Image 1 (cartoon, rainbow, N blue to C red):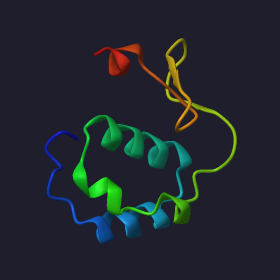
Image 2: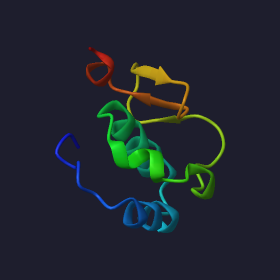
Image 3: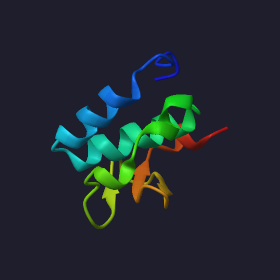
Length: 78
């Protein structure tokens, strides 16, 4: 994810809107935010269906309230 600096925001927008997996979309946005990609500011997340309720990638992980997703502890370690 760290090397995806040159993604086109319009392509990312289109792919996120067409993706049917809520977990994949939330995890992708979480990882892009964590990597601080500049193109993320041009993606309109209000047009992306992120579903409702909490999702979990792993048990006993760390909950990220921004995306309502539980990720492995290793991802939240600075």
